[in-house]
Amino acid sequence: MLRFLTAGESHGKGLSVIIEGVPAGLHVTSDHIANELARRRLGYGRGPRMRFEQDEITLLSGIRHGRTLGSPICILIGNTEWPKWETEMSPDPGEPSKVLTTPRPGHADLAGMQKYGLSDARDVLERASARETAARVAAGAVCKRLLEEIGVSIVSHIIAIGATESDSKLRPTIEDLVTVDQSEVRCFDERIAERMIAEIKAAAKVGDSLGGAAEVLAYEVPVGLGSHVHYDRKLDAQLAMALMSIQAIKAVEIGDGFVVSKQPGSKAHDAISYDKAQHSYIRETSHAGGIEGGISTGALIVARLYMKPLATLNRPVLKTVDVVTKEETVSFKERTDVTAVPAMGVVAEAMTAFVLAKEALAKFGGDNIEEFVRNKNSYTASLLAGDNS
Image 1: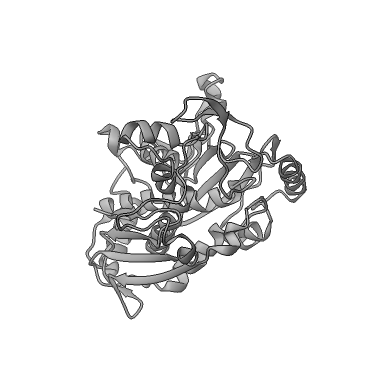
Image 2 (image 1 turned 60 degrees about the vertical axis):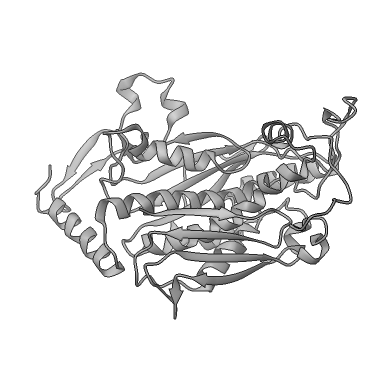
């Protein structure tokens, strides 16, 4: 079974991720991972930390001469700012120079302090920070490489920042990924991108933050990933959980979920036709987002995720309580972004890639990449031959 586990704190020495279950023989290099991590750093509205903290990648295990070995892969992402934080974040006995006692509303600070019996918000925020997503993106880079072997590609684009939302029906493909990434807000709709940037500038001027939404698209996903037989095997349920687990995400939509909930059944579903030339079934629309009954249909998989404004503001005004004195005050300030929505799309690609790669391996199996691809091709051929209806 494919799985991964991350470790590390935001201002710690580094982050690590262990990925287990990747077949042997998959071509993976540090460049593949570095490119994805660089994409995570994109986006107008990011703070100076994106310039200060670089991602130093070390492939510690599981890869030899650019090929996976079938053993667990361990990737380290070093923090170039560690010397500034070595005393504050030291694992050795000691005391911090400052204790953070004014938790930020909207962050994990207070609930985490209460749950774990902690008196310093930094003991919570360091792990709750979105910096952890760098490790997820590294894992996602490996999963993307696996999916590429069976023709699956994943791309995201930003559809809303703050109150500015694109109404374009155009969706980027993998060929458009460079164009999307060249946009300062990773928006495929150029006319809306300029309005998004203007809204970010306005928020920055008053020290506020903005949320927004991204759409993730998975192309050429084979029919049959996921299952209807158990709640935890449903593909849409797994995607929703994976996307919701990203820091600051408060809603996830599969296909046209929000819209079809208000429509009659006669308009809400995707009609099915059959292409005799291609020997395949076709959904004429994509209301279901490529998943029916928890199973991929072979159509385009569409998911949208919605991020709240960041809880750390450049002008702290949110009322809170000092956990020591119990007096009302305002929350403390850390280095922050005006918005992290453009980067959120890249993280969403990584989590989508993980879910699809996990389910592809569960469906097709294989201890090496050749076996995995052969099994997938055999399955696809059986569908074309009409062995399965």
